[in-house]
Image (cartoon, rainbow, N blue to C red; front, side, top):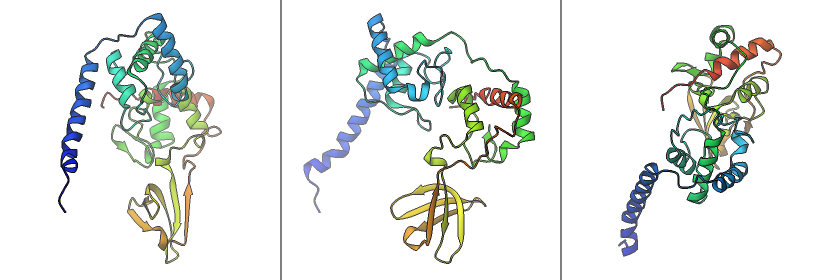
Length: 265
């Protein structure tokens, strides 16, 4: 079949578009924020409250997302870098890309800068060293979580969780792990055509098939039409530590988790 002129042009157009997007990002990375007036900051606050509070909290002090009041931004050392983060998101994190107008993004960046208190970390009540002992020895959390490449990966990697989560969110996750379980950490229980029950971490699922990692770290794939049963488990396999640890132990464990701030990207 002969390609039409338009079809032959599409790859080139696509490449040009990518090049243009990269060039635009580069230009913006070199720019100073042109929207820093009192009016711009007020507009940025309004946009922030509409789009950002669900993760960063109404005052920017963090929740599911990092605390923005500390003056320490791992991925945004300038307003231009913050523009890029807001526009394109951060791959592998909960930070999505945003499609608002450029002026709106600059205004949000200007507003976020006003939240900074100049510190580098939030105040936490616990002792990180004691928390490390609880994590690695007392509760053996590394049987599911990895830190700096050590441990298993049956649950989120915690190497830089201190950058990504606020202390209050970390504590809430320990006492109520089922409050929010992202789909990527759901599990599956299924019964195959032979009547064998298989459970494991849900890797992929579409209309016709599922893939999971079973308890022995074996990758298993199944066609849905061949299954007798299929149950999606949307709760966390982690137990609640509310009644297992004392208040001081919880404080110490939160302090340790919040101290995990790898500089690797």
